[in-house]
Image 1 (tube, rainbow, N blue to C red):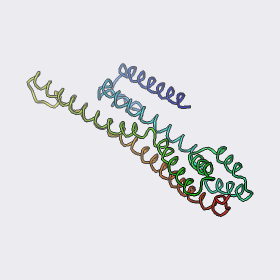
Image 2 (image 1 turned 120 degrees about the horizontal axis):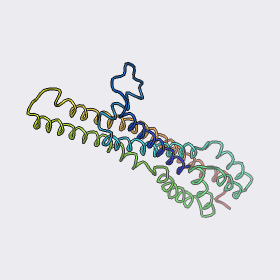
Image 3 (image 1 turned 180 degrees about the horizontal axis):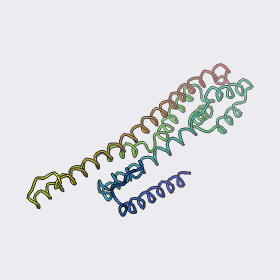
Image 4 (image 1 turned 90 degrees about the horizontal axis):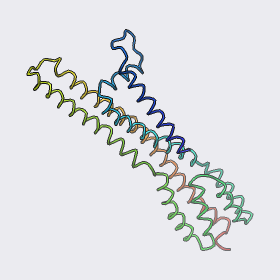
Length: 244
């Protein structure tokens, strides 16, 4: 799934780049311009060769965001139902059945509870220790890829600001070459500067929204995982699992 998603995003990037190259030959100043055509126009005006780096940040950042969202949605478990099924098996003295329930349930919560049940014979302290240790491993898996999203959030506006500096340098180069400070001389460079900044900030804002959603999703899963772990120890104690 991840490879297919990556190939799809690369294809989207390729199609968008081809459209931009074709758009350079289109006539300027049409009476009616669609939003997509306007976006391409501004993209080209901001120097598409430089703006492509900002677009790559958006494409790769969205790829990581979509992958995390899909993974976290799959990892979301109905903990109440899971604990009920575990409780039913433990009431019948069937620890192996409770472990099978966890093994057949996808998500980090079920994996953590499985590790706790696996060490039931060593006492409650061993169960809690196993849950804490394996819970840290699962948290690391949930947060995988977030560092790359953070990187693209930081890089996108930096590339925009770099474009601003480059655009201003181009403007001053034209002033030096022409020897005149008329608006027509500096307008091109200033336009490049502003457009690259705008696109960089837009990319960072989009990725930041997805990042906050993902972090909130992870926090929700971790909280449910911690509550389920505490409840599991109580259920095991109520069913005299530790006394066997």
